[in-house]
Image (cartoon, rainbow, N blue to C red):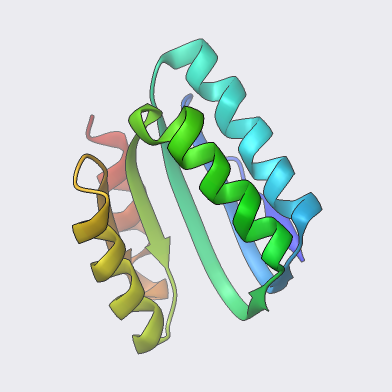
Length: 121
């Protein structure tokens, strides 16, 4: 299940994941990202992973399509909050792959630090 979150950061796309990410979930995230970039030029992303049961292949395709056709240059920072070491490893790989985006991993108890990181633009 996807839940959108309000962080009081005007250009933030913020959400939590609890379960499997569906194509509809991804479309909801990407529509919000598109709206934020149209208003502010660049967006920051806050992703809180409470429980991750996978991602539908069609959702992954939506994300890849968005990132490479419209959005990669419009994302400034990404903060991923989770308590799983394997997620931290993925975040580190993504940070190296997407060099123009500052991507950082935070533990749940560091949530305030993640928000501060996104506010520093």
